[in-house]
Amino acid sequence: MTSDPVDVSGLDRGLHGLDGRRRWPSQQGSLSGRRARVSSATEKAGRAGLRRASWIAVIAAMALIGGCMLTGWWLSRHGVDLHLGSAFPLSGQYGLHVGAWLIPALTVATAGVVWGPRLAATLPWPRLLLASLVGSAAWAVALAAAAGPAAIAEPLTRHGEYLGEVDRVTSMGIGPYLDNFTRFIVGGPDAPQWATHVGGHPPLPTLLFVLLARAGLRGPGWAAGLCIAVGSCAAPAVLATLRALAGEAGARRAALFLVFSPIALWVATSADAIFTGVAAAGVCALAYTGGHRFPTTCLLAFGGGLALGTCLMLSYGLVLLAPIAAAAVLLASRRWNERITVLLIAAFAAIAVLAAFAFAGFWWPDGLRLASERVTNGPGWQDRPAVYFLFANPAAVAIAVGPAVVAALPLVGRFRWSNRLAALAVAALLAIAIAIASNLSKGEVERIYLPFMVWLLPLAGLLVEGRGSGGAEDPGGVRGLLAAQIGWTILLAATTSLHW
View 1 (spheres, rainbow, N blue to C red):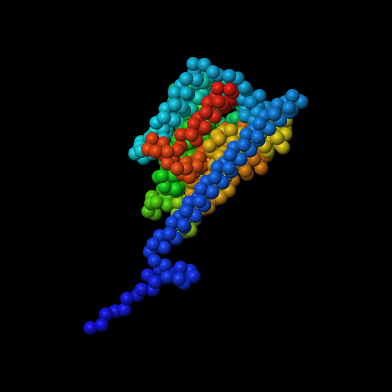
View 2: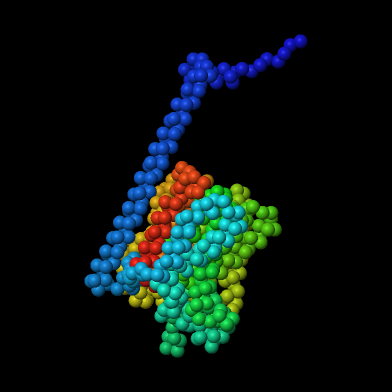
């Protein structure tokens, strides 16, 4: 009886080196050890290079912020009205708020640093989403209350805000309001202009506050509650998006940076917080289209399109959500036919929202044209030098996202499409770059860009991913980065009175 020949070529190859000499297992182990040491050295060098790049990014951002502060001060001293107050490049005034009302913010911050890392790593996913919602709202309210409880709703009572037109719209009726909305954007002898924010946006934000008043919830307190509640929904929506596209581990690493972010200073209280929450929900729906069967995918695509179409009726500038929405769809599925189907359904739903408002009397392209005309003819645009805001707008973004996110920006320079968390951030950076290049958003971008900046916050989670473990109580060594974010935010809250 004959036996089949045994193929020993693989074993023979494994026992020989590249020079053809035979190597025994002990020598093989030595080679593996050398390769492991080389790999470890390369990894350490890469981490050291990333740390240097992160420090360079933070130093460059601080230099940019400091330069914009000094330039803004110099311009204002030489007769240029930047219409920002004194807290350049932000819109607000410098003023200390160091008193008993800062204690709630410090308490929430301490709780976040002490218990946050463990909870973000161990809470069941549904509870983590709920905790991110509650934590975002608590953080925003505590920061706003640093100047006293009245400061929470005070931004909504300023001249030019939406609430100033609620009674006028109520007396007109909703139908005539939509029919005549564009007539009052620029105004004329027989058509008094809308207040600044009403005329600079589509009719839906004002309509929300009108409906709130009609429901018996009149006044700035209820309006502030609406802004904070909807704005805080952005955190769980972004977390859910990250889980769908980048996996649960990546989402958990980003959770604390979404909750304890400086942008909370503008969640309480500006109407742009509402825009942010609705936009995040729309992108989240599109992100889940890749994980379901055809009927559910169509419903999610339609729902996401409705939310993003609603965003177009909240702010003209939210047309720049297109890169973020497209990135979510491209990442959600690997098949082009599914991607195209989702994009077409979402576009149809968004157009349906525009068509519904057109049927009610408001034509979006006319509103955009007239709002742009009003902005460019107004003193707030004409007095502001464009060159200054090419630098001041990115500086304001750096202030609003915080040092940990700025430190993570070099990772975007090593961007790979497979890094889905970074892909969403790249799309957000593209939207911000287009907005700055348009020259229509001169200043106040710390609130205007909220729907885009919220997608930059998870970048800080990539820094956590690259660190060694900090132990069960501090997974990934997150506490140092989180403390930097929180300290920066409290510094802003304690030293400035923001206009929004």
